[in-house]
Length: 378
Image (tube, rainbow, N blue to C red):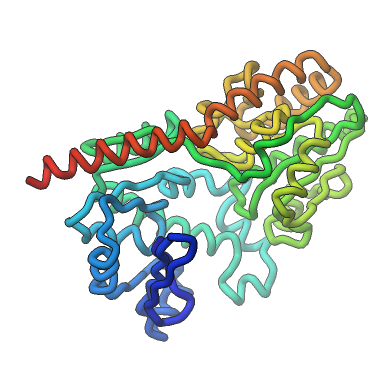
């Protein structure tokens, strides 16, 4: 396991039969300020250290988690062993959906706090950094020959940006706490839950617009959002742009919670709602389905590979609060429909995130990649 060191020292240690290598970044004071001001992800490694890790551990294969990291460029220099990229999100596609309808870089910047402007840490500055990451990622796509993915969307994008490469399906394990419980319909108060982070493309505008519609027609509900606090910049900016307040529309930001706390909250929910404007295979959605929580998500990116509409969950158009509000209102008292969706979601997620299936997928992919690399090399 190789990761970026917090200090400037290379070190190796072994824990539970896993070798860890801390690799320092070469960062001068000038480079640090240049990166901070320009939002440009410029990284510098001592390539000899990378090569020393390869020589020390002698791996059969190297797996890279995402190309938007400092290792994305470094590993293109490795020619002695095959490198397979584990696709996570795809920055190249994400940055194009960063700003929701009615939002713009300039408008978001004006709505940001003075302190964030002075710190160059507004959501617009984050977008600029993300844009630079996407350019870097797009260049790296051409340099790798093997990819692990799990949705029709990441397959399509990888075929477009790296047409000569090979693609292998490999699903992902989820946190252990989510495998041992199952949602049960209780018919009580309408409770909606979402788990997300602070990027603007995660659909905070859709949540506020939808909750405003539901509140306006007299639906009694609460919408709990985990992973973010009410004083986050994205919360204040969306409220300012839409001239609406989350709290007045029954939306509560609950901050970060442990895995077990999220499990308990989801099991007490009527729906899990994921309204991101772009996503590949969001773990939060997968974990909700694994618990059997009836889930509603936007038809974007890789999500249609996770949810089969009206079978394992419900899909709604992106940025369409009216469709979402109607679906929530019409379904939340439909006990039989929700039980059926819950059972199908639970079963499909158990199969998709089964440890033995994933180990088998991974082993087959590794064996094929190693064999193919050996043939191409010689």
